[in-house]
Length: 384
Image (cartoon, rainbow, N blue to C red):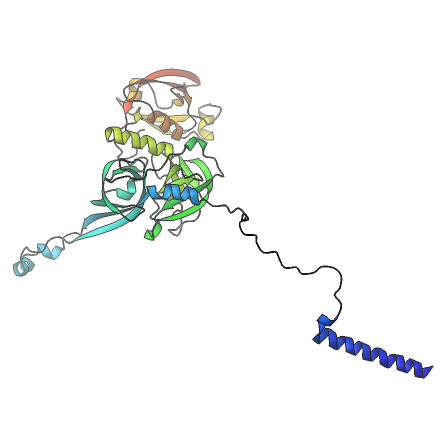
């Protein structure tokens, strides 16, 4: 019995050793186990449709030819060196040394908005420029002249001459929603025409201190120096804004950019093309925000409206009997939410025409009619 057991143990040891050797060096000799197996993926059938890829190429190809690069230059004269006024110095060198002059250049972007050659851009892009050159998307360069500008919205209108100029199609600012996909096209840092994408982060941004009239579209599409004046388009390639400013601690994009809505840009464009300038209503008052303490002091009940802090003597509001301490609550039947909305409502009025305004005075409602004046050219921000 002991001999049989010894034979069995030796046979088992040999079998296990043989199995180990085979599984290590010749595993294919062993029968396959049941369960999962690796199967090669079938080859793609010629002509079969590929998975759909999300792309905005169609929108970009539609809008990009209308976006131009703008190059400006201006002469900067250095102060005359004091030695040039010294009689001894002039005795040796004469009066042949003129004031030193240098040319400073800058760049930005613009959008062709009509086949007749009108181009929208930012006022600050072309401000004080002696020479303006526009480079089209196909590389062609044209000289441009300023038709008119509106510093209070930071919009300027240029004119170029050319054949078959590609005009962009206008979108509707009223249909823009927070979360909509948008694309910014421009010439950031002078690297060449570039497209960035993002979404609409917010609408109606005001109180940023960038322009007098503010109603910005906020977006996280990358906007960098050189993008100013370029196009913000929707997913169909329609113009919905003019890129104008960024919030940045480093000088580059931090995901907070601002664009002027196309409705504002188009209003400025139409007026400048028609008359060379922008005309706005004005009533000659200085207003301030109604804070909760102010509302409590004046017994207003809420903070809606604009507090009249000052009235320009002899101005439209003064002639209509408006007094400091009045609270403006309606302009031409439209409610005033705050000083910004009041400024926009008054600016939209036609100069020379009467407008009814509603005031709160000593807790009582007062209606009065003001003959609207023409808003003066911007100097210092005083009475609105």
